Amino acid sequence: MKQLLGILFVVIPFVLPARYVPKWKKQACEIPASQNEHSHYTCDDDGEVRCLPGWAGDLCDVPKCRPGCDPLNGYCDNPGECLCKLGFYGEKCNKCIPLPGCRNGFCKTSFECSCHKGWDGLFCSDPICRAECHPTRGYCDYPGECRCRLGWAGKNCKDCQVLPGCQHGYCTKPLECKCYPGYTGILCQIPICASTCDRKRGYCRKPGECRCKVGWWGKNCDKCYPYPGCVNGSCNRPWECNCKEGWGGMLCDEELNYCENNPKTCQNGSKCISLIKSEGNYKCLCREGTRGRNCEISEVSTNSSTDYIQANSTDLPSSTVETPPAIKNETHT
Image 1: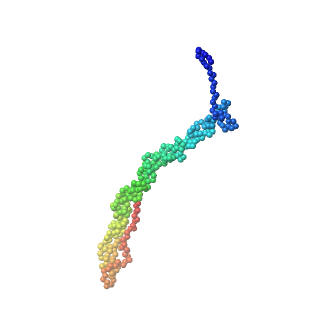
Image 2 (image 1 turned 135 degrees about the horizontal axis):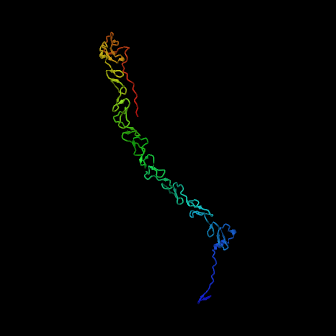
Image 3 (image 1 turned 90 degrees about the vertical axis):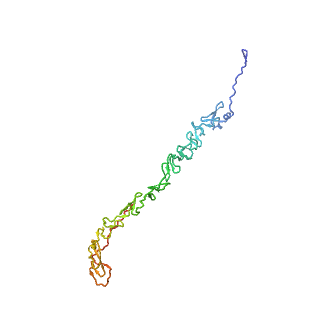
């Protein structure tokens, strides 16, 4: 005790308290080394627990993971490891595993499938078509496309598609072929000819026409062409030459007037028929009881019949008029 300037000082010596060592540390360091071979620490002379390299924690039982190992998605059982939790992978366990089956997507958390631009669906496998593309008539294999389903056409698949091969038609529903005016047929490929055009003798290449097949002519193709060179004849079908009365020959160009110019040729009241030159100019139809080229020979007969018989002459050719063979009509399609 000291007194200074009337002030009494009492000197109390300062004594540091004993260092507190937790009970668990004391117990850890009291374990014999033979029983503590799997521990990850040592004890110093002061009884302080010192962790071995790669370990941490009060009892040095927490391994230190690889530097950079994600603290939330990774863990380790031994020092320097980086084991990934379910749903993560990578050297540092900082990469997520997307939902199995995710095709065009990515993840921010494990087992997620967030789609890249242009894709949709649970697995991001459905491409998003062009905005104007018809939702049921069109489809796409890649984003932004617009491919038409069977029977539909157009930029956005809003127009129906005509039946393949349809030539002059249109559609109001898929694979239809409705003909424009003037055409007919399954594929609208047949033009409708003029209403008065003969169906067998005429044809057309565009609606309202009437083109004649070979051998026929006229507005409605109802007139036939006679045999070329036919003068005084007509035809019922192409290339005929049917002679008018008083004319004969293949071209009807020989006038049958021999009997008129020679009225006394046939005798005994027989009938004279004019023929063409190649057939002998004439023939006589004799009365019964007469004969000869000119019926000039009379036979005794009591029969006064007026029936005529043709003169029996071997030098008389047939009087049948020949006609040219029919020429096959050309078929038009």
